[in-house]
Amino acid sequence: MRIFRILPFVFLLIFSTTSIYANSSWIWFTKNPITILPWIIISTIVIEITFICIMNKINILRNIIITSIVIIFANILSFLLPYLFLGFMEDVYEGMGLSFFELLKIWLEELPIYIISGGYLLITLVLEIPFICMIISKIVSNGMKLLYSVIFVNIVTTILSAIIERIMYSGTW
Image 1 (tube, helix red, strand yellow):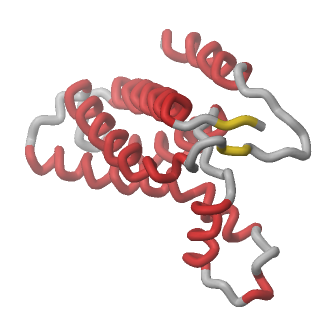
Image 2: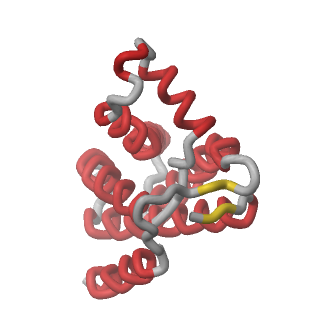
């Protein structure tokens, strides 16, 4: 239960460090960090699988495979969710006859929409916690420990991803 007392402060810290500049866009001074996205995804998945399996004593091969598949699927969804949302909301290219994948290519290459922030962490937690905990809780002995480990490892991997992004690439609003 201590995590629920600490969690609001973690969210406050993450969200309070983000500035909002109305009617402006992020400009990358260097290349768009979307080029490191595959490495971020792979690293995140490996860290999450390893941490969740170790913390929850998942050591039977079948359960490790199930856990891995669930975590991979949840991470892919959380990485794609912002783009899927934009795909449903985007009407600028509607009359141009572009497919979703053509729009995705344009967004990834030209627009500055890939920025890891507190909002991204919130999307990740809202999507991954219920999905992972619902399925994996059937194979672990302590559901609360699973919940805490999913929350913790997602906070850590999101912060690490943001740090890597900010170190390797620079930009401004």
